[in-house]
Length: 253
Image 1 (cartoon, rainbow, N blue to C red):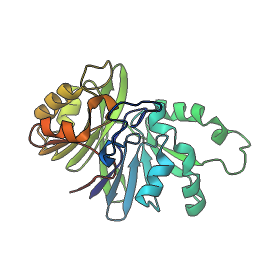
Image 2: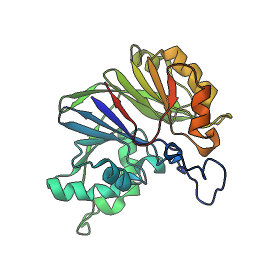
Image 3: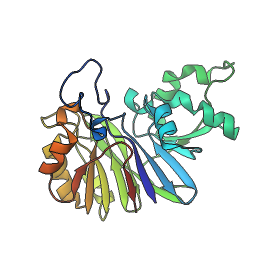
Image 4: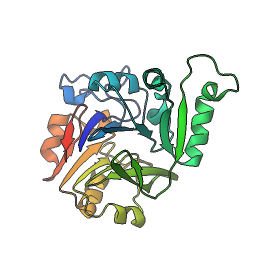
C-alpha cells in the first residue's frame, strides 16, 4: 500500500493569504501546504480521503488518473469544497463518483452542491453516488477500511484505518472506542495544528501525547498551520518516531 500526502495544511493553507510571517515567506517546499487530504493506493484500488478547495490542483500534481471513491471525514469547507471537480472523473468513467459518508454528511453535501441534485440539473454538473458508512469496516476493491469516530470539539469526525496505517484529522479528543480501533497501527497520520492550544484541534504537545498513547512506530503530524513554525526547525524538536507531514510525501507499507 502507498499513501501520498496530497495536502498537509490547515483550513487556510500555507502560505496564508496576505501573511508575511517567516513561515509563509519560506522558500522550503515543505512549508508550502495545500488543504489536508491523502491518496491511498493498494494494488489497483485508489481512494482519496476528503476533497478540499485544492482537490483539482492535488489531482493534477499527483498525476491521478482514476479514483475509486472519496472518503469524507466531515463536511467543513476545507474538506469538501473541491467535490465539484469530480466532473472530470465522471466524464472519463461515465459513472458517478462514489462518496463514502455518514447520512448527516450526505445531507450537508446535498445542500452545499444543491445544483447537482436538482430535479432537472444543468448539463455537466458533478454526479455523485452516496455510500453510507458507520463505524463498521467496509471494502473498496481489495482495500479494507475501518472507520472510527473522533471528536472535533463537539463534532463527530471519521478517522480511517487502512491495515497498518491510520489517518486522523481535525481532532481534539480520541474516545476510548477509537483508541481500541487504533491498537497495533504502525503508521499514524494525526492532526497537530499549531503550538498553542486550540478549541477543536490538537496542538503539538497534545498530538505528541496522543501519539505516545497510541504507540505507532511512526507518527506523521498533519493539518499544520503556519503558526506551527518552519518545517526545518520543528523537525529538530520532535521525539524519535515523529515528524511533520509535507505535501507530496509518500509512505509505503
